[in-house]
Image 1 (cartoon, helix red, strand yellow):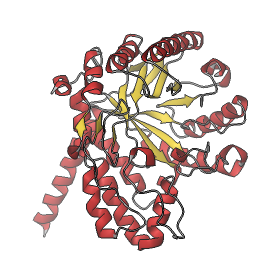
Image 2 (cartoon, rainbow, N blue to C red):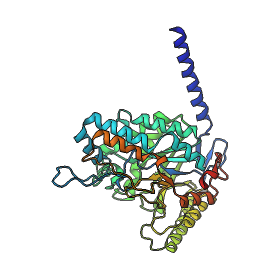
Image 3 (tube, rainbow, N blue to C red):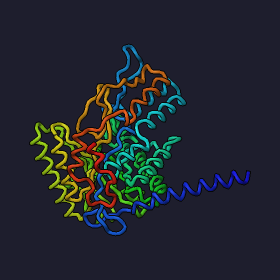
Length: 420
């Protein structure tokens, strides 16, 4: 018995030691002027992808049946809440939990972090909902992702994609058509509590690049209200964690209206905006908008002496592989950190676009929350594993052509993997 216990303890200590080695391989980051730098003062341009769809499901990019059967009492599925409410109503709380675990295990796992490292990326932006702190296995998922990222020399930006009450009316907050966050002080206080818990948990983990306080807070009545709330979230985090970067988004209100950090008392912050141009009618439109956008960031970050991070970007519609490569190269040249939306999409009918690095070329059988049994839903989750998809050559070549991470501290060990 004693020998068995000693073996178990030895294995445990070995595991902890290995975890510490992996964590120590990533130096902590902080803001210095307009750059993100590591502990030796070396500039680190964070170049990554968003891990969309894993903890915050989005119906447009995942193969779910969203229309109820004729005559059904169920409502259309628009988001995370309606998806899992429908499944739980039909199959019970325990069934929902088993299906959700199967879905998450398939959508993202350790092999995906290895792929991203081999592709040459050095960070991931991880969207999550506020409710993850109260899920039975929720924080374990964040722990797991951060550990996998650290083992593969990837920094993690923790992104609060959905605050209590919803910071906009969009489904990617977890529940569409709500938009109550900025109208209810209780929701803001709950969000402070979430960030307090998250910051306390990860304050000593160097693999966490920082905290993105609110994703796309477009539900704000005005920019003044937005930054009053952002200040509250900043202070809640800083009460627990003085080390990590805090990423503050403009919520499409305009980066020129973002406050100067010094008068706010904000330290070690990076400002963040998202780039999409859905009104583009041609590749020329996309290129001109890209040039204007990058110029505006350069102007505003110089005025404020603060790093900027493009937390999401995409060039649909009318983007091309060449346009994407030019944008990524510009981000690198200007030391602008950025993350593509998204790592992968899986559509029922299949197809590829500039939205993601991986997608399914061929059709898949959709997951039907209205009719499928628990066993059927779990079986269909296997279709969602990345090895069942294909890498998009246009996206891969765009990052390869931009010489991804050529000057970063975590240079790819296998950049040529993108060209295979």
